[in-house]
Every structure is written in structure tokens, then in C-alpha cells.
Image (cartoon, rainbow, N blue to C red; front, side, top):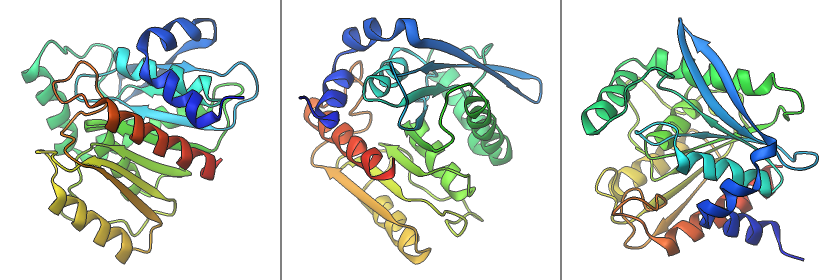
Length: 250
């Protein structure tokens, strides 16, 4: 029988496979924050779920990449929830739009956290969704997962895929009570190895269980197949690490 880790890797490696596999078990996730409407995507396994995994999008919003990851998680036995932090009406047509949306949240950490929290709460209120949750994210979403960790959100774990690793002034990991996993490329020009070392020092000082896996030569966005930084080997290794982490948590 195929292992859960192998199944997860195979599902995550082929967008065509995962998009065709879970359509009957997929639903939208609607919620609002301060009058702004948001819509995410929920993929459920065919049977009882082992746990819930939130997926925070890259800086270009929820698209096929996050939907494929949610479907892959459903195939592996979890509820996969691709959450939206920009809003249904956000204009996302290019670099300047992406920078505007991410910059607004980086500049207003209270709103950033409120949107993450609202998405988690909306997912938890769905029928049949396990309360135990791990939050993951890609690039901007990786930074969001670490923001949730620093906020002390009630999650079973936090996972950053090539995310921003800086800790904003005035923040720390003293409220973080669950493990943190960082999956990063050694050649990432956005957050380099010095940033990763500082983060590991901070987590150690705060006595937060933590682990980092570094993929030699991988650049930023190494999990995004449409990106110039796509690295199939690093992608497979990173998602295998996530699968092992989820097996330990759930």
C-alpha cells in the first residue's frame, strides 16, 4: 500500500491530478472582517479527516497553486483549507497590486492577525472539520504562518514554505506554544541564511519546539511551478517534510 507521505507527494506534484480528484468534496469558505468579504476554498477527504491544515497564499492571492495544495492534503486524509487574506474584491493584476496588498498587511499587524484568525474561525465552524489545525503558507503565506505563531494563535503547528523570516520590532515568540517548521532554500534572496539563523535563535530562546530544513541552491518560490524559481527536487523534499510533520502532530 502507498504510504501517506508518498501519496501526498504524488498528489502535490501534479496540479492536473489534484484538481480532478476532489471536486465533489470541495466547498467555498466565506467570512468577513471589518466589512471586507473573503472567500477561501475547502477540500475534504473521502472519509474521516485526521486534522485540518490551513494554507495561506503567496502574494498573488488564492489561485490554482493553493487549490492544488488543498486538494493534495484532502487526498492525504486532511481537510485542506486555502484561506484568503486580501478579500474577494481585491484587484490582483500584477506586481504593483501584489505589493499593495501585502504591504498594507505588513504595515497593519492587527488587521493581518485579525484576518488570519477570522479565516481559522470560519473553517473551524464548518461541519466535520477537526478543531486541531496546522497553519502553513507559501512566501507571503509563510510570513503569515509565522505571524500567527508570534500572535500565540491556538494552532497545533506552524509551517513556513520560503516565507519572510524577519520578526517585526516589538514582536517575539514568547506566546508560541506549538512547534514551528521552516522549509527554506539556501539561495533565497528575500530571506537569506542569516535571517534563518536569527529566527532559529529566537525560537530556541523562547523554548519553542522548532525545526528547519534547508534545500541547497533553492531560491525563493521553489514550490511554485509557474515561477522561475521552481525546483522539483526541493519541492518534493519540502512537502515530504510537511507530511512527516503532520503525521507527528495528528
